Structures are given as C-alpha cells and as structure tokens.
Amino acid sequence: MSAIDDGSSDFSRADHGLEVVGAHFSSENWNLQERTDAVQQLMAPLYKVDPINRDVPLTANMDISMLQGMIFSKTEFFNHQCFRDPSRARIANFDSLLVQLFDHGSIFGDIEGEPFEVEQGGVVVFDLSKPYQFRAATSKINRCLNIVVPRFMVDALGQGVSHGKVLSPANPITKLVASHIRTLNTVLRELDPAEFFAAQQMTIDVLNSGLSLHAGVNKAKETSLKDTICSYVYMNCHDDLSIDSLAERFKVSRATLFRIFSEDGGVSSYVKNIRLERCLRDLIKSDASSSVEELAVKWGFSSNQQFLRLFKNRFNCTPSQARAGLDSKNYFESGVELYSHMAQSGNPRKIECGTWL
Image (cartoon, rainbow, N blue to C red; front, side):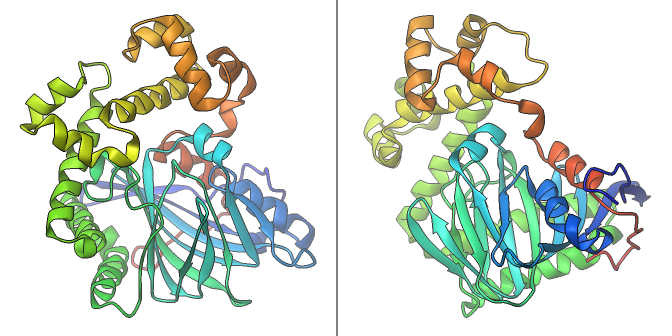
C-alpha cells in the first residue's frame, strides 16, 4: 500500500444520537521502504517529521476520533523529531490548542528559543498557531493521549498564553488532569449528546484550572480578563475595537488595557495582528474570490496603503505574493480538515466502542 492510497479506516457511528467518526493509522501497513513517507504525509499539516536515526524508518500508530469540533487521539511514535516551523504554523494557522498527556516515554524541544521537556506522566499544551520543535528523549516508543481544542472553546488556555506550558508528573494537579483525560477517552463513546457537552465543558474547566493554578490570584484574574477580551476581539474583528470602545465594553480603564496587553505591544497592536492573520487566512483559501482591497475593508483597515504596509511588515511579503505563492490545498484551517486528512491517510480497521484508545 502506498502512502497516497485512498484506502481509509474512516468510519462513523451514532451512539445515543451522538455522531462519532474515527480512523486508525498504522505504519506497519506499509513496507519498510514506504513507512517514513507514509508517516511524513500523515503528519504534514502539523509537522515536518524526520527520523532521528536515518537508518531506521519512522514508526507511528494513531487512533483518532472527532466529536463536536474536538479531536481526540491516541498516538504511538518512534524515532521522531518534529518541526513546526514559523511558515508552517503561519500558513496552516489552526485556531486550536493541542493538549498532550505522555503516558509512556518523554520528549524535549524548543519553543521560541526556550528549551522544554515533558516527562512520562506529564501534560503539555501547544498553540498550533505558533512554531515549536521536539524530539523523542529515549529510544523507546512514545505513547500519548491528545486533545485538539478549538480556540473559541477555551478561556485561560486561549490566545496562545499557555504555549508550551508543561505540567510536571510529580504535581498532584497534573495527576488530576491526566486522570480526567484518560477517563474521558475511556467513556467517550458511551456518552449521549447532553453528557458529552457536559464532559466537554468539564474538560475545558479542568485544563483551565490546571494551567492557571500557579499564576497567582491577581495574575489569574487579569489573565481571565485578557482571555475574555481576546475571544471578543477574535469573534468581532469587523466591529469597532478601539481602546475606548473596549474599555467601555469591559468596564476597565485604558491603563488596565495597556497593562494586560503590554506583552503584545498594547491592545491596538494585538487587534491589528489578529485582523492581519484573519486576512491572511482569507487570502490563501483555495476558493477565495475577494480582492485584496475588499479584504482590507472587510477586516477593518482604514486604507489600502495602511493595510499593505502593515501586512508587509507582519508577514514579510505583499498580500498578492501571499496569495500567489502559497499552495493552500496542502494546509488545513480547521479541525475538520485536519481530521479528514488523517482519516484519508489511514488503514482499514474498525475500532470497536470502548477499545479505540
């Protein structure tokens, strides 16, 4: 079977009215010469994957399911070093966070120049809109449980503030978070719709609590306010997002806005960058028909000259160059498209209820 075979293990089932779709991938279904290519194609939307030992092919197994916009998976990998470089992160521009629990094995890597390590039993959060890289820390197989959470569903996790956050396995809170992730993956297919939505909110609350616990009371309050504002900005990019309008809406002073967005260059700079990123996504859509000028107006820029200047400064290319130079069909903007890509790369094997993870 080649790495581009259409054979897929994608299946769906409806337990208690809740639609569940799932797929399985195993590199063992390819011969030794094709395994590395197959794994690299599977992971292409997320990472450039290379073998640590180039004399040994990449090995990967993945069970993956999607429910109500969230992706759940169990992965096993061996001999991997993974690179999510800035261009891949910018072009794919997933508005999602990846939460990983390492049940076996460990990794180490680099996030924006800062080293990190995740030990066995640890939990890590990656912002998929940002670059990072990692490699397996041992020669053993690594196993992890993963949840891909759309950004709009989260609060304290949101807008990249927790990119690279690691919870140590020795921390009691980590054990609670890990236990929840394991239990969720065990009962996932048994939930009816109402139960799943409750479990989904519980999961987000558990992750928010675990990741913000050590921020301190005042810091946590400001983080919560910032995340609320960030979510509002993202969902209302077309509206008036001036400092005065945001201050009035959220009943805070201009000084408070300046302080909590100081790391982003101020709230105006944050709004500008979100609008530019939304515009970039529109530009590289394969079915995009709007002109550059129309997109500038759509995303709230007062003049075409201003938009062109800001875009060039942000992405080091003009909007026209971005539209002409990016093959958007190789990248994915949503969890649905990410899931579909991985399902199409899968091998036939039905995953029975209760045994998929």
